[in-house]
Length: 506
Image 1 (spheres, rainbow, N blue to C red):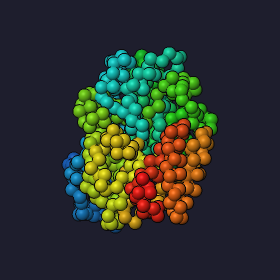
Image 2: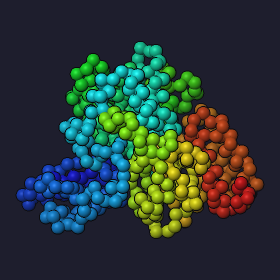
Image 3: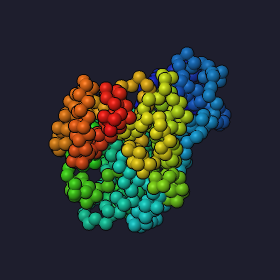
Image 4: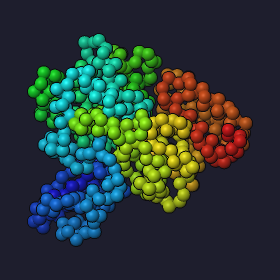
């Protein structure tokens, strides 16, 4: 009997470690021979602790959420189950490319990784020139998964053509947006895919050194990534000779100090260098003068972890999924007041309403959905009448929103949207690095102005609109530039929560 229990942080927070220990202890006491494998998460957080059991080499059967009093029944095969894990509708409806191995393999087993397609992409890339690797990446249509959606291949090509004695690959793992957890899930559940993606990026750009900048609030991810890097070195995935070739690449982890603004690439680079995490003015772009003044690729975890599957299956295979200029799949994180919270990877194009009501199952409270915020704390709110918006970069932009890191936070009809708009401004005021006036001062004035509106000064709505326009146009980075998205969308869609009218809000 092989038993699979997740080591993911969310699963552990819900008791997975206790269940794993209880299974081992009880099996030993009863003389039952089991093999316990700690995997990444399947992403069905509402079912954690999820226990999967394979008997005599058969399919994995899912049980969850498991409680301590079910241990004996699990070992006996009499516990209630959810059927084969792969048949659970939430999982069966997904197109898993980036997360294909997550929840299936032992994250720290190179044998497991290779058996499930790992290193196939790198071996192919090693037979290509840097220009060919870049072209393959461009053909795939892969765009940055961290927020801006910039084409990955174009960024790589800029670094490839830059002249320098040293170049760097920097992975932005400072996943600070509320309601997002995909980066953490990859680092804890399939870290070798991130490493392989960074190595391929190094081959494409002639970079020989990489850094993974991880937020300090992710101790489990830091520990797993640290062990994965050591394992990668032992197996020749990192070092002076990549898989026996003449190419070299090595990497290390840098831990953030807790600043939300360090999710912005130039602030991250300052922090990585040991400086204060403040935004740099651009130009120069990091692709030309990045880490330590050298040409640098800065990509999100999901972008880099998707590279191996693109090179394993071919760029066109990946590009065949998606909608318009939004190619491939997106791991969408469903959170907030929702029945089925978790990670759902699917091709671009699924309507927002399907993700909220069908996949997510509506609100956990059972009350009507009032609003959904897409893209973290800087994302716009969408009301139910906008739920036919397809999940794609351009589609959300046209609807006045942004995909960002693809976090969806659901609110029911008890939510006070005026208070949530105020929180967005307050959040910006607290997290601002202070480099530019529109963000540093504008956010403080924004809190004050929203308080005036909610106190009955409806004429202040024009002032709030002007302030948001200034922040959008004048801020150095997305923190100040995108804070108006949740504020103005809340004011436009839910003026009654500000004590004003739709006409005044517009």
